[in-house]
Amino acid sequence: MNVKEIALQLCTCTWLEIITCIGVTLYLVYDSEYYLALITIVVFSPLIAFHFAVSKTSNDEYCASCRK
Image 1 (spheres, rainbow, N blue to C red):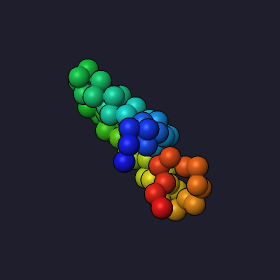
Image 2 (cartoon, helix red, strand yellow):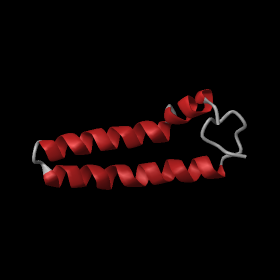
Image 3 (spheres, rainbow, N blue to C red):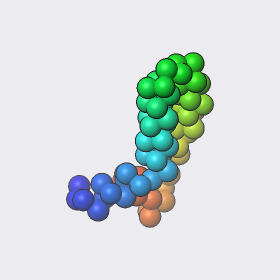
Image 4 (cartoon, rainbow, N blue to C red):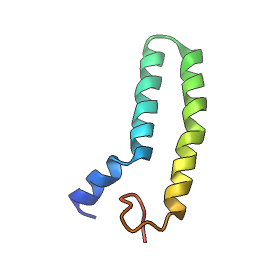
């Protein structure tokens, strides 16, 4: 795996959602808003799971996150 493939993988929608979820959750924990942090995780989890499922079943040859 070369640097270009890694960079494209990190720029996919799924990774952006994961990074956003982690950032928002860590900020809310830092701000002592534990209930809102839990809600954030609950809201983002199905969306992230859906994108992982779609990327695993996709046959798109231009998809950066798809493996053959």
